[in-house]
Image: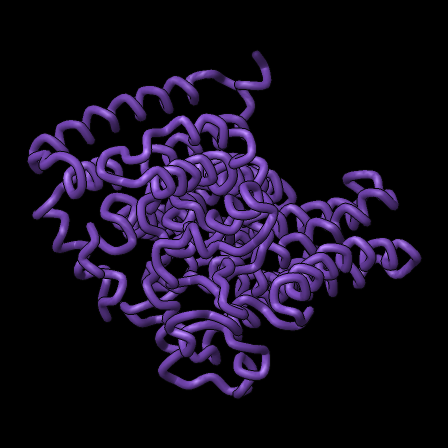
Length: 473
């Protein structure tokens, strides 16, 4: 089939299968559990109250004597149809299985399904979209493939795509909107009222999933205004506002106030959450500690965890140095997204983002930063670029192998997580979350057994991927 020979299809299945192999974090992710509990509660009872579902109050909101999800509701709404479909089968589970109560097993299974059917496809499609978008900046297929793989496996998106996390889904939507807006601007697709409305709807729904996407949405709205000033702007704004009104309606329904978010009612660690806009914007000048912390520190440094991004910034510099007018607006928009997110995170009281791998609050800007890499490829020695890309991929492979917490050792709380991960290599060798979970909770597999199983599975995965890429386009 010609369809299966297309590079985009090969990229999608390669990324999907690698992410699937490293499927992670489905047995104790507080964020995912909070979102899934809300979806299950609504399907089961018609209410967002999760009192009977939560195992612990972490990452949940508490209001008028009841628990609710501690996050924007969009991801829960996406999980609801999945749970509705599989609920009859989940109800067939015994009251206890492998030592877990039925309800907990339901949550674990829903974690796995949501990751496989929502987060992983969103990230794989996002990577393919980057490949397609790069076609507007270079015709060199190798450059585009390298950049796509650097993004998929050489950024912290890797870690946050192999578990059920909401940000990759929201980020896919915003980059899709950017892709569509670009193609409208340069007359590559037919401009229509329906499409403009749909783009607004897509951007609005990204905020419905994750509040902080308002930064990307605001900047892309500005981009839209630079080339579209007629009545289509009204349709764009209408599409954008509808999900935001729905979000406010959810706030009012649950918290009696359209402007109250779940973050304002967090049960624990309240000082470590986004309390209100007034708290977020308490200072226009970020501290040196936080700025260094999210850029160059071994704790959460953007360029330490993803050194390939040095070349992204270099690409921006090379572009402006060249004084090219073509794509001037697009590269300016990308630079603005980078700077605003950097400032937003740096002035944020909890810039370290709790238990994380790298600066997870900065993930929304990552797909945009892949585009300027093209200009580095055109000017810099390719061996340097590929070497930095490989280093980035190695760094971001570590949490895929050992998990965000480093085999439940709390590495994410270390001041130098990368050092702790490196120490795990000679101790544990190759593994993945599932095998480690089996060893930890079910059966004490030896380290040698785990490594042998992992190597065999990796060889099978490699053969499948080689088979995929053998078909010439």
